[in-house]
Each structure stands twice: as C-alpha cells, then as structure tokens.
Image 1 (tube, helix red, strand yellow):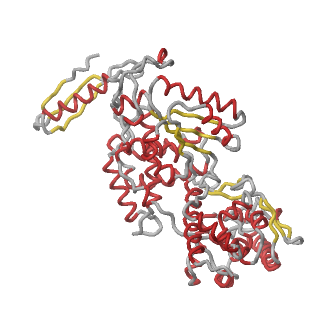
Image 2: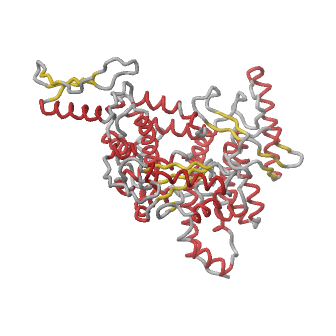
Image 3: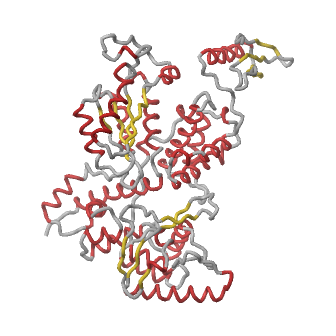
Length: 573
C-alpha cells in the first residue's frame, strides 16, 4: 500500500487530496479523500496529518453516524457493563440535552467549541419544562462527564480519532454548589394537608408526610403490606422510573434504596382513618369503571383506571399544589425531612427515627439531622462547632460501588484533589511502589465494604509501575479475600504516550524488574494537568447514580449551613 497520496486542484480553484489508508476488514483497498481546501498548502497539511496517523497505526476512518445515533447506540450497550438500570436512564436523559441541540451533526465533525457553546446554552436556558431558565452548573458538569465517557469509548473502539470533550470547558468544580434543603413547620404542613385533603392525591401526600416514606415507596405501596387493624404498614418494594421500558417506564423493585429500607412503620390514627377512606374510595372507583379497572399489583394509590402512578409526575403535581396553596416551595422529598424534623422536635430518640426512616444506623440519622437535636449542653455545642469546618457526608453511602484514587506522587495530589473532594472519593498517595504496610491498611478498609470496590491508580510507566497492579491485586486478595476488588492502572499507558506525545526518559537498568520491561519510561506528571483531571473525573463519575448523589450533596450543603447557624446562635441554658 502506498501512503504517499496526491493533491489535485479542482475546477473551482479549491484543492483536494486522496491517499491510501488502512485496508478494510476484508483486505480491500481503502482511501481517504477530502476536498474544499482554499489553498494547496492547506490540502498538503491535511494530507500530511493523515499520512502520519496511518504510519503510527492511529488512523481512524470518519464515523458515518450522527451524534444522536452514536449516543443511542452507546446507551443501548451500557447494560452489558453492569451499570444500574437507574444510572443508564440518568445517562439517557442527560444526553438528550446534547442530542436536542447537536444530535444532527456528524459525530466526527463534533468539536470542543460545539460543546462549549452547548454548555453555555444549557446554563442560560437549558430547562425543558421551564422555558428560559438554565440548568445548574452541577447538572451541566455532569452532562459533560457523560459526554466525555461516551466519546472516550468511541475513541477506544476506533470510531473517533480523538475525544473532543477533553478540550471542552465545562462549569468549574467550584461553581457546582448544591441547592439548599428545606422543610416545613408543623403549621405549614397542616395547612398543606388541609388544602389537599379532598383531592385524589391528598391521602398519598398525608401518608408521605406522616411516615417519611420516599416517593417510590409510597407509589409502590400495596394493600397487602398495610395492616389497618394494627395501625402499621411494611415497606417491601418501591416503584421506580426507567424510561423506554415496555411498562411505560415504571418498574417495581423489591430492592429498596438501602439495606434497611425494608421496614415496619407505625401509623397515627388520623392516617389510619385516611387510608380506610382511600380503600373505600378505590372500591367505588373499581365498581364505577368495571372491566376497565386494572390494578394487578393491588396498589394503595393509583390513577383513575387503577394503573400505577408515575413517581415523577406525583412530584411535579406536588410542586404545583404547593404553589397554589401559597406556601414556601419545597420538594416532595422534603416531606421526609419535615417528618424527621417534627419527630426530633417531639423528643423521639435517634434509634427510633432511624428505623422509621429506613436509615442504615442511628449514627447516619445523627449525621443528617443532628443539628436539630436540642438540649445538647455546652460540651456538645463545642463539639459541633469544632466539626463544622470538617463536616462531610458520605456521598457514596447509597451508591453501588466504593471508589478510591491512588497516586504515586505527592506533587500530583494538589492537582487532582479538587476533583476527588468534589466527588467525595478517598485520595491515597503511595509515594512510589506501595509498601506492604500501605496495602495492609487499604485491605483493612476494604474488608468492611460490602459492595464492589474500584481502585484507580495513576503512576509512572516504568518497570516498577507496570508491576504494581499485579502486586497490589495479589496482596489485597490475600488480605481481603471476600472483597470484590478491581485495581486498574489508568495512567501512564503505552497508548497515552503515543496519543499525548509524552516526554520519555531512559529506563533505569538498575531496577530489578527492568528485564521484562520494553521501551523508555514516562513519569505520570508528564500528562498535562487538564487531561489528568479529566481522566480522574471520568473514572469516578461512571460509578455514580447522579440523582442519588445530587440528593446527598443537597443534604450535605444544608447540614453545613444549619450546623453553622446552630453554633452561631448557641446560648446554653
């Protein structure tokens, strides 16, 4: 095959080129052609670029698909990666922001400038339901992270020659602040429940407010789990939303949000009376509709024809009712926070509140609502004051994975710490080849994790560096045999050396592992800081259920603020 190529001047004065590239899978000859260059010099430069990529075996033929077509195909393949259905749905919804505006573009024609313009537009007016309002910086940054991962996969599979998201500029980490969590006073809650008492969803709102149940738990509640004679119910399942399913997007799951989510909740007599009336009203509706009534799941709350309620639609209707009632605007989920606040004010103990809300432990409840417990005394107030600046929620407590980032060098910690702190991921520095003590300490932590563990390592490519995954995996599996651990060397790799044209250095022959090592060595700090940040963030975000994470971030921000106010206004009796 000749890769010399040739230039040609068109009749209109423009220039073009043609050059042989890598043969197709069937061995047939393939050529790259491009026309429309203003000058012969521009055409020659483009031809030289193609020839260089062919010589380095990095040439990728232009993708014959649109941005929207690729994203849909990519999302369709995500179940094979083991990603949660809810996370895949979150990816699909967020990529719609891109497809709505850039979906028609050819995939290979997408540029970093296109993405920058997209992010600006989303920040200014990206909301679908509220025209003219923009998305939050956190949401736009999350969209960027998904796009980055999708295009990185396209590059890995040789669909694209480069990932243009690497050069795009999403909102900064510092700008991604979460909104404040709110709750109602008992007077405000009473006003709302009175306002909606005679509406179809009035009983649902009351049950959520008086039990602290999540919207998916309330919408998925079955009559078989309700014992009105004993004034209690059991949370056994939840109803989730996954668009594109044959069920219309609604999916029942016996897996509750946390392991302690399956629980028994005592009911007050007022709520028992409301549920009795709900059962009688439902029976009347069933008789009125007749054969058209369909409630195969025996749900307590349904649409007029007996079909399941969409939890997201319920939340939107709640917001409209709040506005019509003229009350302080809160989310449906804030009914749960309101219930917790009222229980605390009534003097209930943390352990009982924890069990009622389905928290993992009383300590978790204290973490979340500790600022509402009064009568702590001067010593407790001092302790709270000392923790305000250091306070962090475990933002991964309800995720399906545990993630750590390991770095070989101290100097790089200052580069990536903004990313790891934003996503609340532990950052560990090995300071060279990990010692047995370092690995033993890590194994101790991992023995206490009952979910898949992912460790992403960033270190030099040299004889020691390429041996680290083997050594660490061996030691961790021996010291934490029951843990599900994946240890991945993210950087530096041979592909990154070529792709980023990284500076190399001669390999030290004194290294005992140099015998099997081929090529020159590269230090991890040769990677440009912006690319390093992108790599770290992309590997973290792929394990996140964005909606779960954002809810916890909201809680953390609100708790920080309330704790600070609590300490500032403290005056012991």
